Amino acid sequence: MKLIIPISYFTGKPRSEFWILDIDSLSTKLLSCLPNSNHPVRGKGITGITQMNSSYYVACDFNRVFLIDVHGGISAMLALPEFNDLHAVSLVNEGILVANTGRDAIVLLDNDFQWMRQWDGLSTEQWQQRIQGQYVVDSHYYDTPDMSIPFCQRRLPDLRHLNYALQLPDGRYIASSFEAKGYIDVDNWEMISNKLPYEPHDGCLHKGRLWVTTVAGGIYSSALTEFLEFKLEIELFDHVPHHGWCRGLCLIGDKLFIGVTAIQEKNPRVNWLKQPLNQTRSGIYQLCAISLKVEQFYDFSDSDGARIFSMIEALPC
Image (cartoon, rainbow, N blue to C red):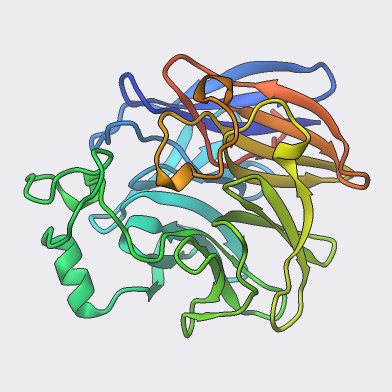
C-alpha cells in the first residue's frame, strides 16, 4: 500500500511537493514538486488531495485547483480571483467540492473544472468588507488590510473557517467549521452535529460512518444519521510521543492514517498543546483501524516547517 501526501512549508521560498509513502517498505520518496506559482503566498502551498479516477488526482493550494496525473504533473488548473486559502477538495455526485476557506464559501465545480455553484457563508455586505480590506487583524500571521495585495494572495482572518466539505449519502452537502466546532449544512448554515471540544479539520466516510479529526488530536466518528452525534474514538496525543496540529485523515482497509503538523509558535489557538514546541513533529501516524493501536510514525519534519493537510491512497504509476 502507498499513500500520496501533499507537503508545503512555513518558511523559505513557497513550494509544494507530492511525496509517496510506501507502507510495506516503510520508505518515502519525493514524487514531484509543482512549478512556481504566478500568485505565490508566503508560507503557503499545496493542501488538499483526492482521487479523481484511476488516472488522476484533484488537488488544491492556496488559490488554485489542479488535475494531477499519477506522476505528479499538472494536467489542468483553475485559478480564480475569489479563491483564497483553499483547504480541501472532495469528489461528490455532481463534481468536485472545494473548501474556499478565506472566502468563507464552498464551491462546486464539474469534473472539467467548470463553475457550477457556490454556497456563500458571507452576506453581500460581509463579502464587500472582506474584499475591500475592512477587517481587523490581531496577529502578525495576517497581512495588514491596507496592503495592496490581490484577494487571492491575501492572508486574512475569516469568519466560519470552513476546512472541509463533503456530500452525505442522503445528498446533503456539509462542511466542518472552526467557528461552530462542528459540521454545518451549507444549504441553510445550520449545525447538523453536536459541538466538539476542539475545532474539527477534515473528515472521511468509511463503512457507514463519518470520521473526523480535531486540531487537538481527538478523533471522532458518527453514524450517518440526520443529526450527527460524534463520539470520541481516540485521543491521539495520549498515545504518541510527538504532537502537532492534527489534520488529514484517511481510512484504507484496516489502517487509519492521521496527519500532524509541527507547531511553529505558542498562541491561543494551540492552548491545548501539552509539550514543548521542539517536540512537535510533522508526519503521519498509522493506526490499526480496529483496535486503534498506534503502529507507526512516518516523520516528514523539516527545518522549514513541513505542513500536512491531507493524504490519500496513491494511484499505481
